[in-house]
Amino acid sequence: MTGVGAEPAVAALVEDAGPPPAAHRERRTRSALTRAGWFVASVVLVCALWEAYKAIGSPDGWSVFGVRVLPRADDASMPHVWQVLQRFGRPESAAEDSSSVAVAVLDAAWFTFRVAMAGLLLGGAVGFGLGMLMDRFAIAERGLLPYVVLSQTVPLIALAPLVVGWGGRLHIGALIWRPWMSVSVIAAYLAFFPIAVGALRGLRSPSPHSLELMRSFSASWWQSFRLLKLPAGVPYLIPALRLAAASAVVGAIVAEISTGIRGGIGRLVIEYSREATSDPAKVWTAFLGAALLGLLVAGLVALVDLALVRYRPSGAHR
Figure 1: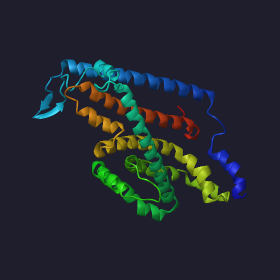
Figure 2: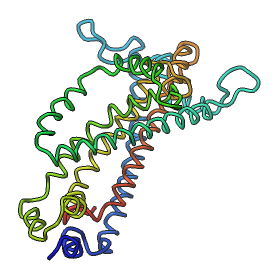
Figure 3: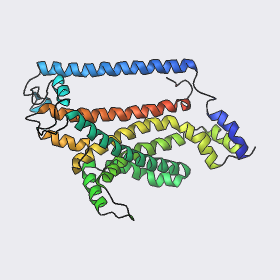
Figure 4: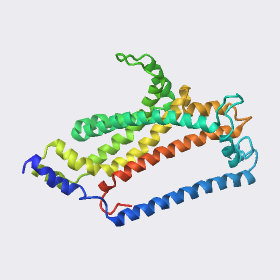
């Protein structure tokens, strides 16, 4: 059997014949509703704990041996939950044409979302390429993997200004380097690591018997990769993608804060923090915007996971 003729047989062996059974779909629906219910319950619980601590906590915070272990519970440090929510509907500033805080937070979150997604795509491509390279050549794994791990020990706050400075002096043909590109590069720097490690583990996950079966079919390296290794690596790539997406958002926000680039949620945190004394609820609107941005990205990854559910191991459908 030639490599080309082996594709239908191998595909039948390494992939499910069709969509999950109806029982699995119903189980996934119930699981999704349960997770949504737990999410709502957790939000309510956090708000209740916030208000409870504000009611019983000390305005000066609680300290142990001179070290503050719990925050202050005064209005300047912990505004009421309803005050933060109400602040979303009020104007951002005293100017006549000022938009509401909600609009400003949404605009900033949209800017950071696009920058983070660009970084995630770049980091994902680099990480997956490194994973393929290390899987294909053992010498590449021995030579590159230590440096891949070492790259994550560099402090992001120290790296961000350097990347912005290098980007300002970078000239690639007619490309004009924009400040947001530096933020995307920093987000990609954090995102590529989990993708690289997850891709390497996933591509190495097929059993020796499966690899021997591919060789018996005279399958090429590309056919083995496409029909066996890539589907087998999906359960490893999805958790890696979750970590990479969260890292890209965190990297983008931290880069915006440390470099002062305007337009994103990180810059909004800096600007609103200047008014923390006179308008403490306004600061928390930016924090909530960053949290909602992280939830949005997590939801997108969950949709990818749902689309690739057929590649989960047997019995893993939820």
